[in-house]
Length: 311
Image (cartoon, rainbow, N blue to C red; front, side, top):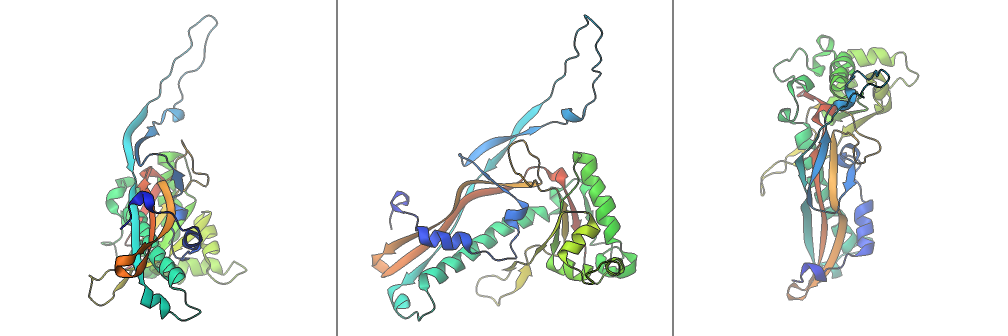
């Protein structure tokens, strides 16, 4: 087994890895990437001083009023390596018929597994009740009449445009620009009486994500289509949605940068790379896909969770 410094990224396969994209993955769109030099370091959080209105009037020869603001650096990101690899035996390669390509197929499959890991690292905290303050979440699991599949007794438009939207604005001064829906939630909304009533007045006549964005007052509606196997190894495959039966209203900064608020960022010290090396002892080539990052919620006030919003 070669050492890490002997491994050289395989550029053609890295390009395949970077380009391969399951359309159901949302991680890159919800947790924009912030390149970092160090794998772990503090990041800074400013207080709400910019919202203050101190008395700024000054009489001639009088002293100027002095103000202060605080910067908290107690939060720390810690990047971890996400990496997987698979062997391609020489016999497997020899018996792989065209148009199949053992290197390409292996790279794509391993990359998909890695992307699912990152998607899970983003979706899990974003759909957890513990992430949000009491003002920024609603648990529908014990409120069946309010769940969006309950029809006329539920009010998804008011829930999002009034309750969720105003909760975020009241804590941040920002309006949410993104609504994230689990696949099942989208299916329910398309049949909801409130939505169907509004569709009557649109020219499309069908409920698209673009139309839902207009109804809910956001720039975009993102639907989590990716799934993961929830069964234990060796058991029958059981697929479950990464985004569950939840909805998340969020402000996602369109221009991620230092000092710019956003619900979540991905601190990344190494972009995704593909390595290929030889294991003569096993008569095999090994393809490894790896990246080093930390998807982290940096401003929970920029999000509102509708938990178990459909049954």
